[in-house]
Amino acid sequence: MARIPFSKSPLTYRQQLEQLQSRGMLVSNESKAFQTKYTNPLPPSWMMLEITSFGALSMIYKNLKPCREKREIANHFGLSDTVFETWMHSIAYLRNVCAHHTRLWNRAMSIRPQMPRKPRKQWLNEVDIQNNRSYFMLSMIRFLLQTVNPSNTFNLKIKSLLTSYPNVDIEALNFPSSWENEPLWK
Image (cartoon, rainbow, N blue to C red; front, side):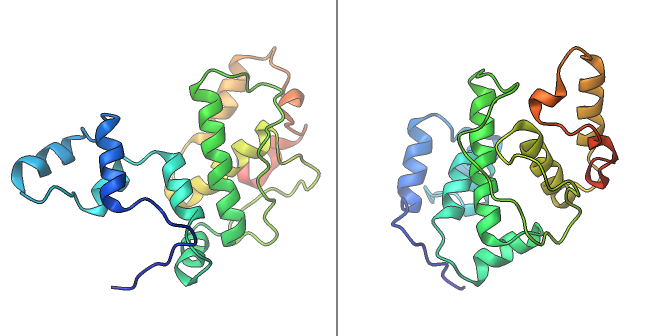
């Protein structure tokens, strides 16, 4: 099995497990079943990833040295590894903004994801958008969902939400006036 090199000293597998246990996060049905069935105290890596936070997953990816495996992961999503890394970090940041009930409407994010130069999947045609605003972040999620769940209805849910609240100024979210005509959002 090929060893994937890390650019920084990541936590060992055992340290990550101990950290999750101390936070009470290792309580999924799979991990409970594993603990009762097997004597090995370390669950398999797939089980660890099932309960890993998005922020931790973002850091794991960031700490990979530039290598073929890192590029393959990003390429699977239709992006370069440098762009994918900034997107992972930005989505983790966006998740924290939402989870901690911080204002998202008209917010200029302090984290700026990179604009993809040659995405290998449908992306925005509009090039004059700010990459630190809600519209760009939602477009990133929509882009990634093309791979994760091609039959998702994220676009319909966003349209429905904005229709349900017509008093929301979508320009403050940096939505361009023709955003619904973008192939990514159709």
